[in-house]
Length: 165
Image (cartoon, rainbow, N blue to C red):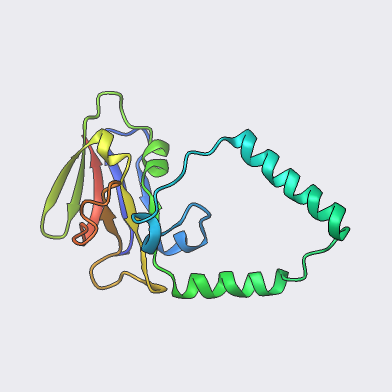
């Protein structure tokens, strides 16, 4: 039970988080590249048009080809999960807890200390849960990173719960 983290306080629904299952979550992020690669602004219509055009061109040139690499892709993804360093955004969990409109602070309660973060900045938090394919059992169960990466070298560790105030 030491790996369970709660979100409570001024929320409609207190939430219990288990970082052990996040490895299967599609929202997970590769923490080794997250802070170094800035996401590009994408136009969904433009992306769709490019993908359809690429598919159409391939069909015209090669004919219908079924993907022969399905097995190798699965093997690659499995290897990545077993050796990767991953994190997950905090915002969906905070949103599901439905914080009170008057909430202005999120307190990150750790084993030995507490950190108060403005609610707006808390929405951008990134929760690291895996390092080289292993759970963060020594100083975890999670590491908390600010969305801008300012504490990338010294994340908040030994997190026990989040309290919305």
